[in-house]
Image 1: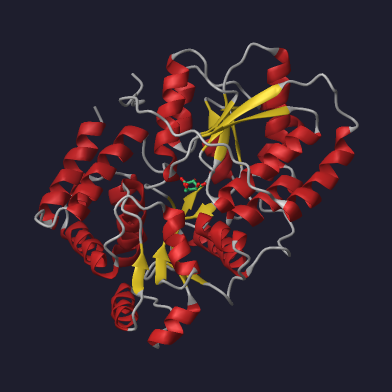
Image 2: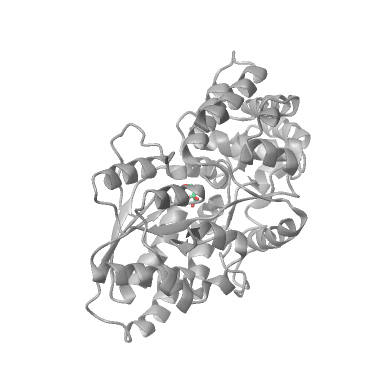
Amino acid sequence: MSTLRLPALRLPTLRLSTLPLPTLRQSALGLALSMAATTSAQASDVEVLHWWTSGGEARAANVLKELLEAEGYGWEDFAVAGGGGETAMTVLKSRAMSGNPPSAAQIKGPEIQEWGELGLLGDLDDVAAEENWDALLPEVVADIMRFDGHYVAVPANVHRVNWLWANPEVLDAAGVEMPTTLDELFTAGEAIREAGFVPLAHGGQAWQDATVFESVVLGSQGVDFYRQSLVELDPEALGSDQMIEALETFKRLRELMDEGMPGRDWNIATNMVIEGDAGFQLMGDWAKGEFTAAGLTAGEDYLCAAAPGSEDAFSFNIDSLAMFRVNDDGEREAQQALARLVLEPTFQEAFNLAKGSIPARPDLDMSEFDSCAEQSLADFQRTAETGGLVPSMSHGMAVRADVQGAIFDVVTNYFNDANMPADQAAERLVSAAQMASF
Ligand code: GAL
């Protein structure tokens, strides 16, 4: 039986991504227009569901829209605001339940398998064979894109989740350096507070709490423990003293956050770092898309480093577009074109420059990418060899959606409840993982 959760339906916030994108638009379009002449004018539309609505994300999504339109296909934007994509997934489920899914949707990790099991995904084997995806993609990436041996999704990028971002002017004003351990983060945070800034910008939403929690588990307990507890869901690890210690450290981080955090969107928190109101943010590298959109330069105007204590780990989050099974030949053709474009160098470069991630295919020229992206690529390759490359629990790469939802509930309830002790939260994590396995 499938474990796909069909949560209570909430009213979605639909928003079109309409932000201007002068530079990327020009370069991507120039190339795409020259290809357009060779394709049919009879092409159809693709409706694409995604949650890329922040400044940086919308710039990135626009790259795909422009490329597709330049080949004569129509892009119907189905953007559902809400970081981490929970609302988008709720909307997608309601559309699928009513028998009317979009042509393509941002679906990631094990959730691709869940949709595949429901028999709703169309296959991309033809385009994958023509474009030689097997040779292009690292096995760890290709594996996630296949259901039952068939390609059903195409990867757009590789995000790293365990990053720390900082404003160097705030750090200077407080007389502190970029921390490399959690202890150093707490010490630097106190100095930043004394200097009159918010130490750690955060948005109090379940997925953001889980994003920070995941980095604390990695940074305080290491890769093996992370894998045992948050990937393999080993009850002993989930209920262990190590987990209790990680939970306590995680909750201490509240001391570095401000009172305005409840409900705050992640990109507003990033903006606090951009504006020099806050020193740090613990967030995946989609935050870099915001720094880039603000015209800032990595290593000068803002700093990046592995989340404290986690330099030997890389928690990966791969965005991908899965295609739904469709009957219309024109729509199917448009889906294949979309899938092909996503892996072509033009898209991979322009999209990932705007998105903050690195390309999903490792053979591309990285000369246009900044120092944080270079570090990301080097760390991806290094950790793939050393065993530090781990799927992100908080971004749907490690466990199925129902388990992830149950873990989110425990993590966020614990983080926001001054009276819940860490050992109780650890016990609840054990039950969450067990309940979800039924
Ligand atoms: C992640 C997604 C990223 C980014 C982020 C914030 O789950 O993979 O592409 O959009 O959420 O919305």
